[in-house]
Image 1 (tube, one colour):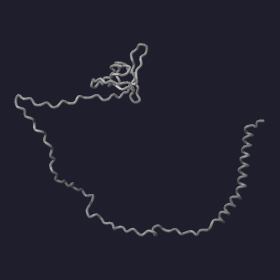
Image 2 (cartoon, rainbow, N blue to C red):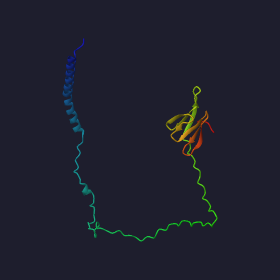
Image 3 (spheres, rainbow, N blue to C red):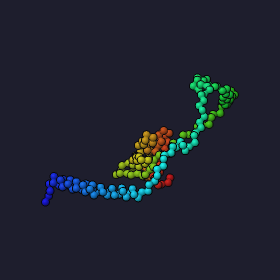
Length: 185
């Protein structure tokens, strides 16, 4: 037997109203009893009159205000101190070469060296007679490279072999080899 939605709602509201009424009627005298019992069992403590903090501390002695003897906001000239002149080290005297002699040439500049390769070589794979593909790794990036590919506009792949890949550092035109990870050269 199913009750309609309006009948069910009426019954729920009636039950709620009866619950609230019972709580109010039953709970009211109990609160009064608890309040009386608490008041009777609590000892009466005399109240202490409030004390000012200023009365508890000795007075602070402050010096009297004195006006400045000069105007601190007056326009002033900066005082320049006499400093010794800065002496700079004189350049070495020129080397005089007699007529017909040749002066010694300065030592040659060291040859530039390419940076270490930023890649790791993980190996290679060859599909059905196609070119050998090498797999390089740099941080989060992975590259599948073949001979002739340019990586990061800085390195050109010269050769891909099973155990190593040879790269050319383009700014200095220098070859560098990278051995497969886990292998020693």
